[in-house]
Structure formats: C-alpha cells, structure tokens
Length: 176
View 1 (spheres, rainbow, N blue to C red):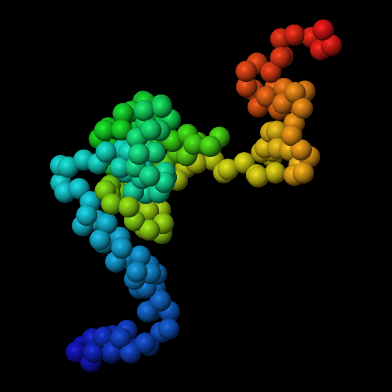
View 2: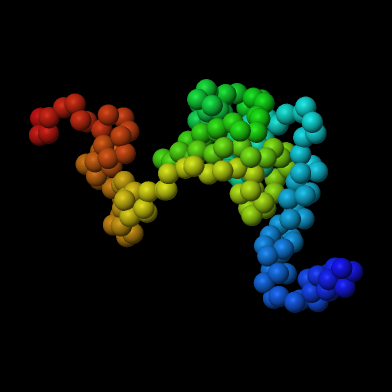
C-alpha cells in the first residue's frame, strides 16, 4: 500500500502525465497573484465599496471622477434604481452603466477597491451586456472632407440639423 502511495506522489510530481500539470496551472500565476493582491486590498467582512470606486476599479470607466459623474447624471443603476456615487455595493448586485450609446450590464462577483489589470478585473464581474453595435452602423454625422474649406451658412445649418443642434431650421419650410 505504501508503494502505491509513493508511485502516486512521484507520478504526479515527476510528470507521469503531461496533462496533469497543465490542469493544475489553468490559471496564469501572474493573474492568480494579482487576484490575491486585489482580494487582500478589498474590503474586510462587513465593509462596503462605493459604486463609483468599484466601476473604476474593474475598468468600466477610465477615472473615478468619471464614475461619480456618471452616477450623478443618472447613467448608473444598481438593481433597477439610480444611485449616488456613495452607494454601497454588495456581491450579487446588478449594475447597469450607460456610456457612449451602449449599456453595460454586469453582476458583481467580487468587491475590490484598488484598480487592477484587465485580466483580473474581468474576474470581478459577470458581463451580461449585449454586444456592441458594429462600427459601420454608427456613421459619424456631419464630418466634412479634408480640404473642402470653410462651410457656408447653408452647410453649417445642414450640419446642425444632422447633429440635432439648435432646431436646425426644421420648423420652417425651405425657400421662404
């Protein structure tokens, strides 16, 4: 019986099967170390994380102030309710963030306070967002060709009408 145990120990450490070692190392050691550091820097039992800090830490927004501005502007919803930047986030909450004609829907898996790398950040939430629209479908409105010169008054009014600025003269008939 002792010899079988010795064989199992030596077989797994000596590389008896090439796939045995790969299965144990499915997670990159660097990611595992960064994840452990994020866990250590995260809130202790009973402590909470602010929503603006969390969406910044998991890289949904570029800066924490942008996260706070999004919350103040009503672009962040937690479990269906608009929230202030100081809202306490919990594991299992659904966060909806509207940005740049797209809505990100994520479910919180892990609370962190410090900004981490992208591979670690992805492990802190479940992304249920719809796929972004194709780039061809979103055509920029009112882009002029290079070298065409200064726009005329008529060109400027058409650009404003396309962009939806200042009414653009949509209320009056043309030619009058």
